Amino acid sequence: MIDQRTARNMARVFAAFCGALGAAGLIASMIAVDERFPVLLAAMTPTLLVVALVGAVVAALAKEWAVQAACLAVCAVGAAALAPLYIPGAGGIDPAEATGPTVRLMQANIKVGQADPVDLVETVRGREVDILTVQEITDESVDGLRAAGLGELLPHQFVVSDSPDGLGGAIYSRFPLSNTRELTGYLSANLTADVDVGLEESLALIAVHPAPAVLFPARMWAAELRGVHSEMTANTLRDNVVVSGDFNASYPQRQYRDLLTDGYVDAADQVGAGLVPTMPANRWFPAVTGIDRIITKGAVVTSLERIEIVGSDHHGLVADIRLRDPADPGAVTPPTIVRP
Image 1: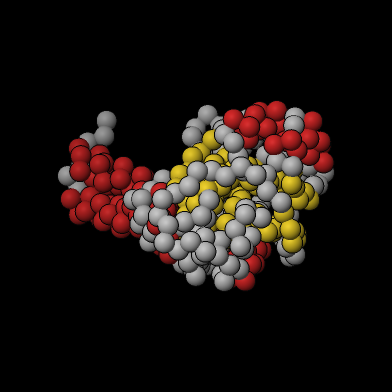
Image 2 (image 1 turned 90 degrees about the vertical axis):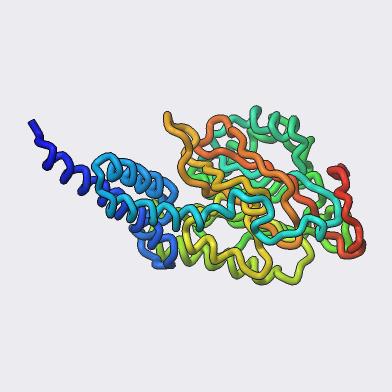
């Protein structure tokens, strides 16, 4: 039988450990150390903050007020860091600045081609998607999507497929594509294209898929993210830029937030959608990390929704993106979704 004093000591140690985990996650999220453990620890920061909150409750029950205060302090700092994601407009974007047409973009990692092609195409059709970015596409899945009728809905495409490793990527579009290019220096296919949406200047689209730090050296992951940042920086003078994909990085990680410079803003930050966890989507427990992301510059995200990708281990994203039209700077009324 454990006596009261021993139980209280155990509760204090447990609560302090929970608080320490939360603090470790916060520290890891604030630094850009390219080593696997801190990188993965940073990705788990939201979960570790919940652990710290549990520690605060346990400390309160044990009347360990100092430990409780420490745990609550960790939770408060974490909440302050993540709260802007839940507040629409906290990213500093003024929707009135985007006066052009609205396009609907869908992001989908199809798990080495294992996602159901018929269901994916039906999602594109039902949601009237204009642009689709795909990761882990294979030769077989390209054929499956074609057979399911994707080409009829999104006839313009840039596909770099791979079998059987799923290192391919693709851009499908209702609108004409030009200047298509596969970025060099990446394990998987990272693509870029200009999308002719009817404005004076094309939309610059970057479809990304850096290597995951959980499977490959963290320095490789960080180097590929820096490559993505370089491509984004090269497009900063463009009127509208959209970066969409499986970043294998989430908002709590400093390396991801370092992408958000020069006017680039995370879609979830623009609409107050929160962390938007997208993986894993095929387990008994909910998705815990949001590595599928959309970032824009110039263009403004007006809605963002997480969707199911049948057969994949990722959830997908669907975003309505209102484009900036420099030729009509005074318009403030958002137009309807354009269809070529």
